[in-house]
Image 1 (tube, rainbow, N blue to C red):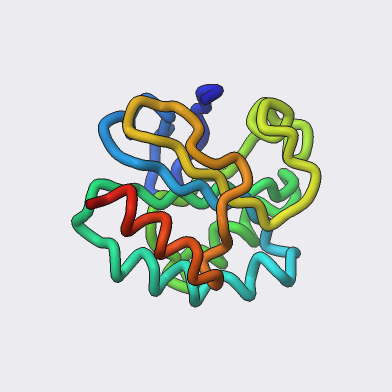
Image 2: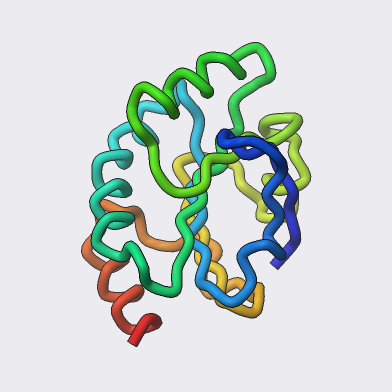
Length: 138
């Protein structure tokens, strides 16, 4: 999987390498994206149900720089969990280019060694996601 290093809502920078040893489920989203926002309650439930297991949930916002404060406020106001990151250069970020992200929401699943398991993983609202996680986290 292509690496990344982005600003973490809680402070500092988080890199893909920091998450090695765990599965990583990445939610690529933006504050202005209606379908992305609809997935939030489902993602929060999945995060809660799989808490303490060998998986990290990363939400990567591709909001524009002008919406930085809007992103920070939304993460706080909606008590978004997991690891909340914001990409540089929004749609032109290295991440969106490396993964050919041309629409959102987009979900990507990476294995503990950093390999892509599914570059277009099921949404949190899709029961197929839980089936896949249950299989991988046996």
